[in-house]
Image (cartoon, rainbow, N blue to C red; front, side):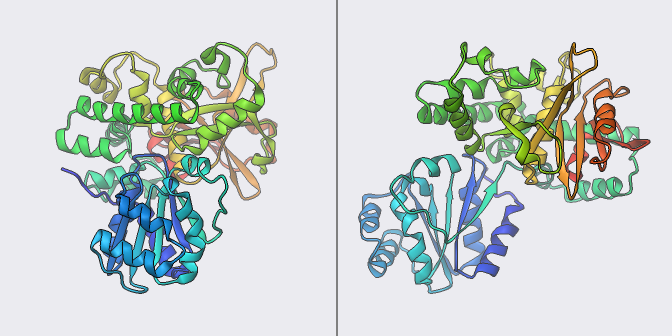
Length: 446
């Protein structure tokens, strides 16, 4: 059964409709299969008297003939109504241009459609595909752009018909109090289910239908293959696909940066790699965390474009990719992961989900490393966030939380710049002097 899930982006779309009143088109950007088309159509059904959804990935020939005459707005609108058998009502209807990257001429005409002001317009597409299809056209400035990510943990709880847990967790976080070991263990088990299923709507739907994690894994493998194929199209050399598929193993290696040479086998041209990495970032299938050479408030001014970590945009997909060597990840492995009994260091999975949760909140990701006094290894802060005139260091641990030398040394070295500091782990919330130790499910509140 296909479900329409409650998504937070709905409120952002409603705000655009109310505040812009047709003066801009709305462009919803995101990776494929995150639910862009679904939420756009659901909004259109609820908030407009009528709508037309134009899917440029599967458009009839008559549609392309209408597009060829898009400068004649009266003709264009009349053709759309005949093709889709829908009557449009002035200022009460919306036209959805789905997969807008496949129709650059329509994208260019958005400026004039908005000026015409008869109807509202919602576009959907991946940022990468849009960028690759704009040569020779004028990009419309009459666009409001919002990014869509996989379902966050609160949206996942909503899908499970739980409207209470997240608000209770937020209350305890704000009061700096724990929930007790027994409740914390339950909340961690619930959260690990999110880590395994992930936030891709198709995977969540499969879980609700079957409660079988192997069936969910099959859906996730289809999405991973789709992303790999997309990367092959933008980079026929296969480098982007190989970099993407190696993301879990790179994090498992515990290196202070993504080791490109270990994946591609030889040194790469820096300019080419920087362009390729930018394309991968624009795809929104992965989240990049860049090394901040100077961890101060202006993090973006000090990021090293050639020193980075790559996280998978959805942790459910990440888990599937980590066990890619088998045809399907067995339910026994999932059950052991769910109960935290698999004999594998899961630290990299927790690090990936923290990256995902921070990114879903709109955070840009940065980290920082520096040598220990012996210079035999490095200290490392997994994530650094800007908060006003201060920075917030975040260290992620799945075990061994009783020692936290890196964040301690960081807060000494940059004492004047540090506000709060957090150690994200798997136990109940508590405080050690100035350090907040919080369970991973609470990192959405940092």
